[in-house]
Every structure is written in structure tokens, then in C-alpha cells.
Image (cartoon, rainbow, N blue to C red):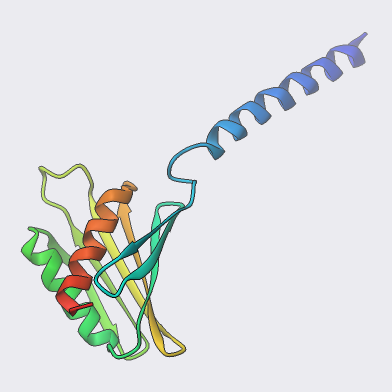
Length: 142
């Protein structure tokens, strides 16, 4: 009789776990969305709270990160961390109190002929990530 109850408990736990996991997969932050940005245009993919894009050749990581820093500073952010090298860069900016998010993290790395850029807003906010990307592209003239 105990074995019967164990089997029923296991089946119920499996059903509950399946329900929870299927609910998590439909969360907007887990779905992938793609869009074009800038005048060039540049393709950017948003998934798992991160916006990824590849910038066209012709820009250095230093110039991209300088524009990103100035864009975030003009938007009222406080720069908490900034590091730049020819191979990559990282920028962490704190949002002002009246904004619905806490931090923006921008990372860049040199890959092939272009620069890979990732924008992460905590907590995740796709629209704001895309606005930041648009502002950076505008500053770069892309």
C-alpha cells in the first residue's frame, strides 16, 4: 500500500514540475525576439534578458565603449565600473531612483572583423535595452 502512495506522489510531483516548467518557458524574458536597429541596419537578438548584436567593421572597442559611457551618463546614470582594452570592454551603470531598473551592463568583445555587444538591464527590460542600443548606434553614426 505504501508503494502505491509513493507512486501517486511521484506522479503528482512530475505533473506539478511539468506545469511549472512549461509556465516558465512562456515567460517573456525567455522568449527570443529579433529586430533591426540603427540606420545601417543592425540585427539584435533579445533572449534570457540579454540583447546581443554584432557591430559592423570599422569601429574600435574603445570608441564604442566611450559612446556607450557618454550615452548612459547623459541619460542620468552613474558609472559604477568601466574597463576597456582592445580585446573587450565592460561598463556597469547604476540607474537613478526614478527608473524601474537598477543597473545596465554593457560588454563588448572583438570577434572576427566586428564587435559583439551585449546589453543587460537588471531587472530585465527588453524595450529599455533596445533604446540603449539605438542611442549607442546613433552616437556611433551607424
